[in-house]
Amino acid sequence: MQSYTAARRRFLILVALLLAVAAPGAQAQIGSERYAAIVTNAETGDVLMAANPDEIRHPASLTKMMTLYMAFEALREGRIQLGSSIPVSENAAEMPPSRIGLLPGMHLTVEEAVLALVTKSANDAAAALGEFLGNGSEDRFAQMMTLKARSLGMTRTVFRNASGLPDAEQVSTARDMALLGRRLMRDFPDRFAYFSTPYFRFRGRVAFNHNRLLQEYEGTDGIKTGYVNDSGFNLVASARRDGVRLVAAVFGGRSGRERDRHMMALLDQGFTQMGVSARPQAVAARRPMPQVVPAAQAHGLGATRVARLNHGPATAALPVPPGRPPAMRLATAKPPRAATRMEQGDTDRNVLRLPAHRAPHVVRPSAPKPGKAARR
Image (cartoon, rainbow, N blue to C red):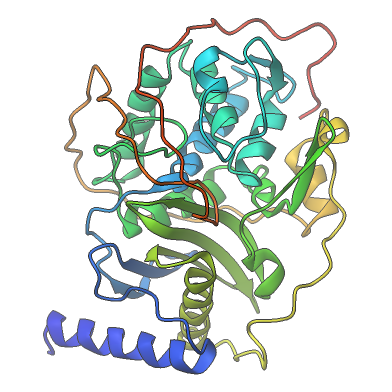
């Protein structure tokens, strides 16, 4: 039996060759301290290929996958509705980009927050949703997120906020994030279609989905991009071809385009391993944006309706292997945010300085406004 080291070396050589053929000029940071990748069979959880899958990395906006998991769970249990009104605190409104421009005292619906997270990766909406679900405290919500991660089998993940903004203690792994992607599909088949929303309108502004694979890689139906300076460009992607579905995670790309090309090369190889014929042009020309429900109309429509308007019905439930025993530490206070060069999403063009962390301006969640509850 060949050693793990030899197998890993062959995998890295294979990935490098794939990139040279499928994406000239794109050399993801293989071997760097930020790089990690995994490709899994979504139905069985089997690992098709992996590099550093259990090494600690910063998830950046992949964090919002768990924020959305918590929101979907609350929806399923009837604790909130799609039309429930979320108050915007001063703390949430001050979050740095990406943003949808929320101001203190504003309100948005749960569905608007969901759409803002899956498309714009909006940090202000994520903080507002986290405070709403955490009974006024994003810190408390982060502890809830970490507990949920442990219950799902994400043994090396710790959350400190709802958005993925820089925090030295907010960490995860490629394996954990791929597992979370699979659990989102399995546990919320009626909500997973939100991740394929190409864009939505919020109060006169259009927010486009940062996940370009939705337009550029055949079969992609989600799920989430992420970037902060300490993480590089991250992506968890789901794609389905000829009845085979893969979920993959890539951490540490040097740019959004490099990360995307690397992910497409890995997915191509994964489908080949599963006996799915390669497409002549995996990186297709950008397809026209499909029609999607703007926020004003999406209010009152569930994910099943969004799925019909975008990419068809949501995925079926998928089995997930049991996780390992939990081991975690919950912080009672969040350390100060260090000034850092970052911008969430798919660009690092701007230099932003984050304000020093202070206790959030707590706004207790209000009851849903009469007549605003959305159909589910």
